[in-house]
Length: 117
Image 1 (cartoon, rainbow, N blue to C red):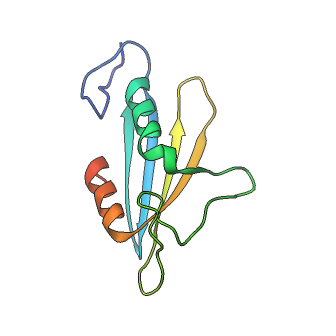
Image 2 (cartoon, rainbow, N blue to C red):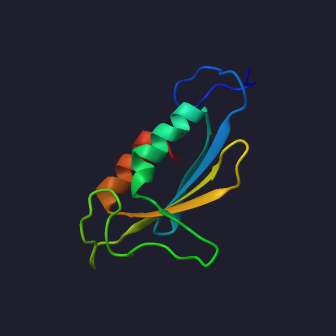
């Protein structure tokens, strides 16, 4: 049984939890949060929002900087794209880093959805 509950469904589970660290940059501000996640909830996040994220490999390759990861809208000046970085530590696996770019309205939804502070 895990010591801490899963941060998504708020219950303890059999076995260890995984972790996901979110960091959203909005100008000079950073919103972030560490989530303790059971494997089911981590899979749900990676299937929904994470399906649009680019995996950052050792060479730092990522995706297009001027397209919103969520809604696919072009983000052109004077609008600003907000980068999201997610690091996932799944129990028994190596660390995986993800990246996404968000328009303002999609970034605000991420802050709300994951309670980023």
